[in-house]
Length: 311
Ligand code: LIP
Image (cartoon, rainbow, N blue to C red; front, side, top):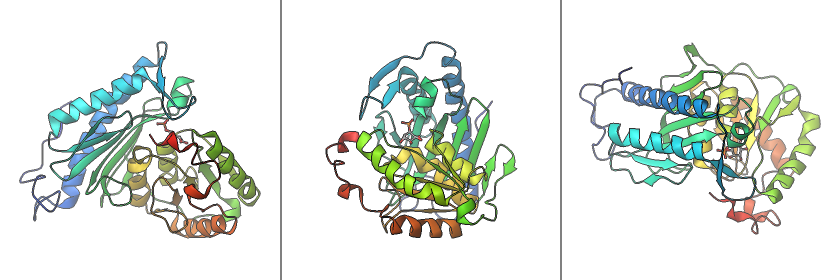
């Protein structure tokens, strides 16, 4: 299909604001960016899904032996990079597999070409293409996510959101439900590629599991955040994520009425991210702090040794 036409009068290049003075309305511009993200996520998703029919080759490892990159991750990132070059030449790019370009427009695309690479490698049908477009400095502590999509090509589920226009799963609007009490909450989480950090994460979770309904480790951070927005889990918590793991998912959560928080008073990002209904998030932040689950990464013994996990 055709790409959406740029809204009339839009000037994404104007100085100061990514969207320019009075037109178009913020929602219109963000919806336009979301349409591009949907279209490209589908293109990359189809490629990734089709390649899964063949043999998946590991192209290399990154931070540790278990942190793999397949040829398809690279191919998907290349596709997204070159399509955005054509469509949005002045926007910046930040991708998991190393593509980076500074923004001239004030907007940057933050892209994970396959989130859940280990699931992909094992043919577990729970991986995604995650695409966000952010304004401002493209770092989690300072960016504003304008639009985001998380697409699972195995289930053909397209989660999408534009800032101020709501979050959706395909055509269905998403809204965070009234939360259960914490002891009946289902928590999604994930583990780092660093073995030191995984052990620390496991230790913290072992102190929490008895006080929750249960825990899920599904293997794809962007889909965990989408699951919070869709009410498939009540909470999500993880540390040591990279920007592309959570950029799109965080907008899904906030547009569905949920909240995103850092831990230990630190900004959202590599140190930690928590998502869910605002009341439940506040309660969980306190619980984590009570068991020392929010000390900074630098304070975790052995972590420094393993800190090359920064991608
Ligand atoms: C992975 C996540 C996973 C998380 C890992 C990692 P990748 O991303 O989505 O859920 O626990 O730490 O970041 O490497 O598959 O793109």
